[in-house]
Image 1 (cartoon, rainbow, N blue to C red):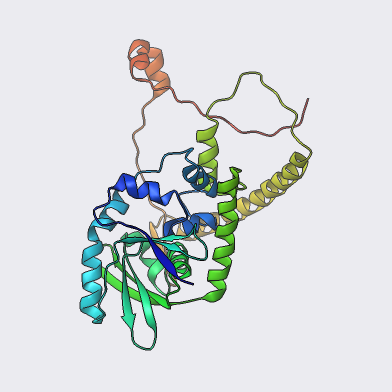
Image 2: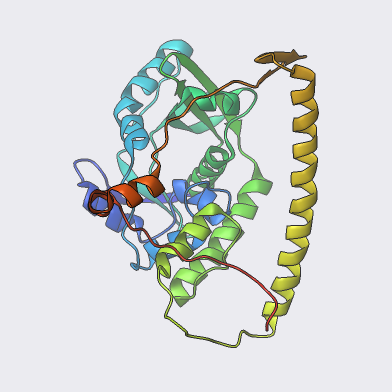
Length: 314
């Protein structure tokens, strides 16, 4: 495997960079293609790549991750003594041209070869994800980069919560890379054919459907295909299982509450349980509407959504 330079990213505008990204699958797209991304579904990514959906602007976390990248790289060099060379280029796989890579840097390791360097920042709330390994989405990102470049391994360095610094070496995994190439090949066929990939059970897919079909047409009715019967059976089975699990969860919660009694905090091994009194102030909208209807109407906000239900036909 080897890569060629598609374009230099030095002094490239963010808008131009996004246009080049549409030409293929990047490292941060890998977890989306595999269906494990917590924030985006494969269908949303497909719509981005086919120009049906604007690219989502980077949030605060992503912005500060980019701003702190030079610091993370410098700290990695300081602590490890490994030099990192920047590559201000968008790379393209020669074997699979739809696979792209925008590396934070590369480093040369004796007896290993050229390796990728990737800089990350993480919230303190996600510290547990970095204890013994790295988050799955980053493992896939690095596997994607190794698939594009053919490099032997990767170093990933992370600043957690602004005060904890870690780094790990990730070895090249040929089995994972082979699987990833196949999944990305299948996904890119959907982009080329203009047919969306199957929906999954992620929150991102639910969000996509809510945004794609925000309103129903009053009194409209269709006869669903025969495959709907299979889905309904799966839905009923899932509901039954959920009811059992929910009841089991509530029972264990009740037994723990009985043990705690009036105490606010309880410990069991390395677990801490709290059952704390909380006071809240809530607006009495019914009284406000009855006693001050004009004021209520002035400040009330009307929202709409589509409610999904399944019942027996009458």
